[in-house]
Image (cartoon, rainbow over all chains, first blue to last red; front, side, top):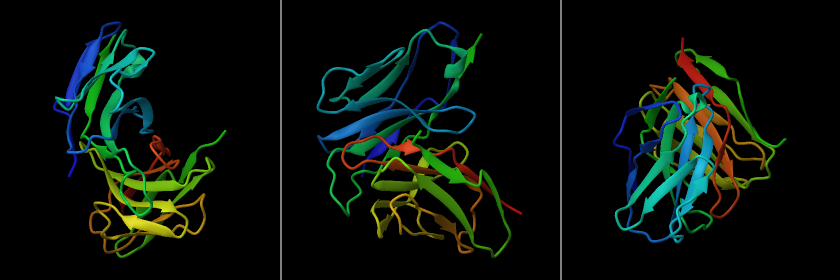
Length: 120
Length: 112
């Protein structure tokens, strides 16, 4: 079974600085997707960034980028120029790549999350 | 704008009572999901449905039931058999294939 581990329960960063959140996962599959979701105090889950395992290039979305190390099964999130609005819980999630009716391929497996605080 | 609507935002359950959480989406997504979130925990999958009139159990289905009579709707019933129902419940949906899931705003369920 696949597992996702976030080893940092809490992190803190100074406003305008850069922070990296860690995520490792365990799978025997070669085709999969990885996601980072943000959950602010409002509790809404917001997709931050996604990475396809078959792509070697690291995904980037504005101030958010990932360091995807497939061999090491590592998927860290880097937040540059941190802003107060970045304060939230961040969840790493894994999803199998194939899709067939009746299977569990579309299901997300979540880590336990990292609480990010941003200091002004 | 398209999205996922969960209601109510807050819900209270009495002992021995069944309660139903609503989830409606107008994104034309085929797949829908229910997750439970406890403090300090990630999301755990309760039930999922990839197509109308079909659904499968997730990792923690005991004490819960669902139906999928319409593509837009995937209600979750928390039955009296669920002895620890206090949690935050999130509904999600996605298109077929390798598409990300979109989430509703959640329902917080508490015991009276």
